[in-house]
Length: 423
Ligand code: FES
Ligand SMILES: [Fe+2]
Image (cartoon, rainbow, N blue to C red; front, side):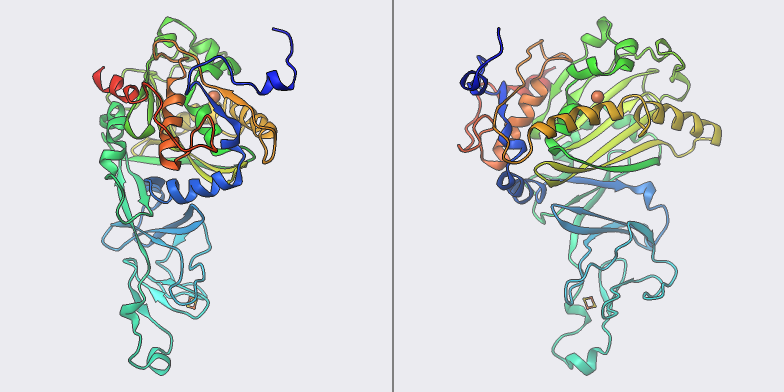
């Protein structure tokens, strides 16, 4: 077909409903705000891994939908999450990304979360234990017991990840939310303690959904030279792309031929427990969390949308806690050679999604983004993205194909996850 004029360029493609989306869902400020309110404030978010809080009084801070969060390990070894907000006058209590409350600080007592503004103190269970000059100022009108922190639902699950939900009454439990999608790796991830050995984060000028797409669609393996030479055989093209309830997708495994890439080696010796050597599973959890196991290393990506065209992505690499120093070095090498900031694939993905972000900035002209490949729900089928955007439409109550209209179920969409369950 020759190049198209404006009306041809903006016309609907000759595909079925659900096989394309409108690019406004990636660029509209109002939709971004609705995503925070309707979606991110109600879903289970993997905020970190328990190995990042190895000792009592360790903490990490993060945010969900603009709400600052603090995660702490108590003296009783429990991991708990709270809003990182002082109940006095709303200061952010802890500003460091991570650390320990065990030792005292210039403006904080040991074993306490201390708000440096007016010196109120909280224990690791979120109880307020000290209000400066409490009696003098408040007499008997307000006391410590009235001003505890805002606690959040928090669970450690699926290989030791710490999950937080801002909603006190989520629609479904964490197990119901993610359990079926994790089934393929549950035994592997829970066989023994895991440990984070790599962490970096990036602020990327693209929409968070486009990042999630690149983690869940494998058609773009044409961009990855590494994946073409280590895969692209019959077993690769037969990998299943399975949809699960709640918008999740799992890409099934095959044996990766790492030695086909010059300078790389088999990962068989360090493959995770209960799996054949050199397998590659991908669990894509709606709406933006990815668990990617390549034989000897697990990668987890977590998105925090910052705007319609900006996302904070946290990248973690994990191995087995019991690794010897030599094993750990090998595992780090396996991870970083593909997924480190200077590795083979990660920056290629970033170039792809930043290129999309460059054409879909706020106010750019809307156009259609195609998700219409049909290949028997195998790896280059785009059923995973169709399933994802169906779920997105449900949560936001907008049609992904025309976001000015309310959501209506796509014909056949209910069957996506049912197919997976039946197989
Ligand atoms: S704002 Fe925290 S003690 Fe005043
Ligand atoms: Fe990729």
